[in-house]
Amino acid sequence: MFGKVLIANRGEIAVRIIRALEELGVDSVAVYSELDRDAPHVARAGEAYNLGEGPASENYLNVEKLLDVAARSGAEAIHPGYGFLAENAPFAKACEQVGMVFIGPPASAIEAMGSKTRARELMKAAGVPIVPGTTEAVADVAQALRIAKEEIGFPVAVKAAGGGGGKGFRVALAEADLEAAFEGSSREGEKFFSDATVYLERYLADPRHVEVQILADSKGSVIHLGERDCSIQRRHQKVIEESPAPEWVIDPDMRARIGAIGVNAAKAVDYVGAGTIEGLFAASPDGAGDGAQYYFLEMNTRVQVEHCVTEMTTGIDIVKEGIRAAAGEPLSYTQEDVVLSGHAIECRINAEDASKNFAPAPGRIGRYREPSGPGVRVDSGVREGGEVSPMYDPMVAKLIVWDADREQATRRMLRALGEFEIEGLKTLIPFHKALLASEQWERGETCRDLMEDKQWLKSLAFPPAAQVPAEAEHAPARTYEVEVSGRRFDVRVLGAAPNGSSSDGAAAGPALRPPPRRGSAQRSAGSASSGGPDTLSSPLQGNMWKVLVKQGEKVEEGQLLCIIEAMKMENEISAHKSGTIVELPISEGAPIQAGATIATIRSAAE
Ligand code: MV4
Image (spheres, protein in one colour):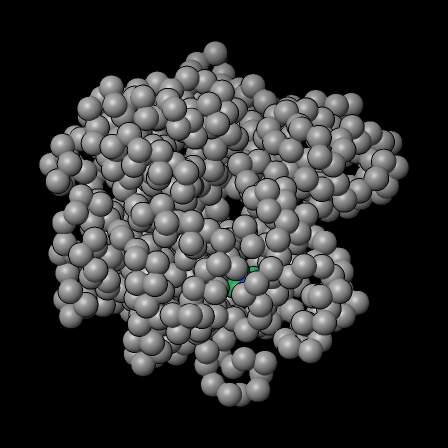
């Protein structure tokens, strides 16, 4: 086993890896950006190195700096976590070249799975079922049209070869849509992966996203740990994951079939470590009633965000097994040792406002209390008083619960969500509470209708008390605990405290700065009109990906105005109020700073 490992990551996954290393008796080395100076992963590691300020490209993604710090600290291996350099074959090779172990699969496996066309070709040859379609690049629209008409049939999915996770994914329902889908997919592939190559798949109607966890060692042993159902997604970002899939969706026979497919896929690329085969589960392809099918979609050659639900149902520490495999040790388990028990659910607690199109809601965390009790696990990378920066992933914590079955796990999750206290910023907690209480969830549906239901999402708006009204900006609320006739109540008093007494909650524990008013898109004080401030500013720094409105246009509150791409994520920005767009100083493709004006909207009454 290694003596010391550097973690080239931040947030909850860095903390997760540090914990695994500690249990293995391995020293940990954290790295951090200037912004993360006070982050939990820094405090939690054995030693930590500042990689400097600036965007991730200058610190968490800077290969030269990482390898330099790894060498200086005496680390023998680097764990990339997920995101950042996790699926970067050149980085895995660079580690190899300087004698540093990359904790992950061989660079060749990352490369093979990185090209989705190559992966489809390899999987087909290995007998792994792939979604019907092409395994080679489609040259142009004319060829796409011929293949779609003669071989696949409409509707077809057009996907970017360099893509994955939904990037560059377009659907052509009929012949007339194909050109736009082809061009859109190709453009997005070029933009995000410098690869305009696209391929075609048959478009499956409302499939489930079902993936299987794999562990492999360097001796050739490959096992699977059962499936995860991640069908609840928003713009291809998973928000809730569970394991196993609802029992009426995947039966033991199908589970064994999916497991075998995962093992074969991993073996075909000589995989080592923890990995995931993602696939689509179609109850009845084409509605033809010819039985359920499972198709390979892509492989994630790293530990995933949602690995925790599998840890809960198997009792196997996936992160530790991955580190052991990289150190050349055999897996601690055979397939026969893997026994699935009960049901686990994970909710991603993102700093986002579901009622405003899941707008990013970075800011400073006020009071913060994590839930606990039986069957509850929280993996987080934040703490009270910490800042959630718009520079990074909005996921601040993962709440995972386990119980004997899906129904009880759901109740336990609702209980734990109720215990979770995060003040100062908006999170997906209200969204998760509402979704898990829905009939759609109870029936184990993919919930796509809910995720697109503007009215339903709007109903999840945060109570006005949480959004300090503009005129009361400097008059924070105080909370008191009182007893009335012996019964205890929490009372929240708004406005300035009398006699200049402390403005912090009398019973709210340590004095905290009033949480800054950040959130969805920020409102700056415009003209004091009935409709509130006119100016909508950008909550984050990024690139203007799409502008969906024009100056002079009338918009409704909540209407999508533009999409800002930041950290490879598309962030939807919607109108903060109804009115006419009198100013729109943004253009597609241009960079935008946090705080910069997106639009000025004047209410009709003015
Ligand atoms: C598909 C599909 C239908 N047909 N491919 C790809 C990335 C992943 N985030 C979702 N992807 C899909 N690929 C074909 N050929 C539908 C989706 C899809 C989806 C799948 C399962 C559960 C939720 C989904 C939400 C949007 C798109």
